[in-house]
Length: 349
Image (tube, rainbow, N blue to C red; front, side, top):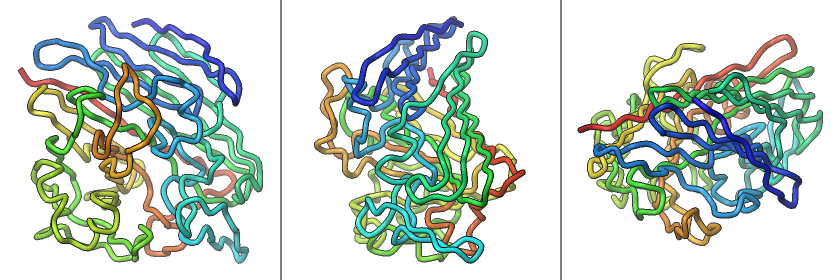
């Protein structure tokens, strides 16, 4: 294993890129901007290496990009209704940046900050960030750490940690987009997806969960058996019409706090590549890249259209600060937020 680092100038300051390459030549490139994943190069069934994650030609284009490509959003990933929540009797008002709602911690969320970074050994990069009390409206001084490790068997492990000095809400994930045929090959709707989830969260017209945990059986939301993402994506189903496709949180079966379990598999039969996703978190937001049109120029001259890649965002439930029946996102002094996400890339011969 080896790690190479390079510096890139941006309007926010210098960005550091780290490329971790294992003995087989498979690699991951990480960025200090948003503690992001900007490339994953893995073999297909014939051993051909391709980059399978959406990303941009210019490192500066990751700043404030609409798709939030590959980055760690926060301090609360996903949406909070009306940008408002109450905690311990006090009401907090957040920046509104997605219709009437707050999204991904606000316009200057973690995804748009340059994190401190350092390597550990020859297979690990650690990113750290400090978010002061009141930043984007959130209470508490929050220290955040994202630790990435790349293995000989093409597994990328991300451990997300946070500590606070006052009660706050935290929901962290990574917003990487996959197209396992290669990032610039067009639509991913033929990819097959399996989810360990017999329920999902229906939403209102602004993509805020209603609070119901609805069964997927008999609906286009059922991925309990592997099926092509595009198979039912255009079905006349209310939740699919709202977001022009899949942009929903699935409720993971057998969730136990701190328990790592395999929750999703995405597979591309043409290339033979697949990625198995494991997490300790209670939900996975599946976003089919429904609004990618017009995003920045892609790597290698790629132009990304809608549905060019899919994000599988392991996380707590959206709008959880306003939904007492959802797993609590509250973090208090003396507690540690710690969640793990693993992406294991494989290929079938």
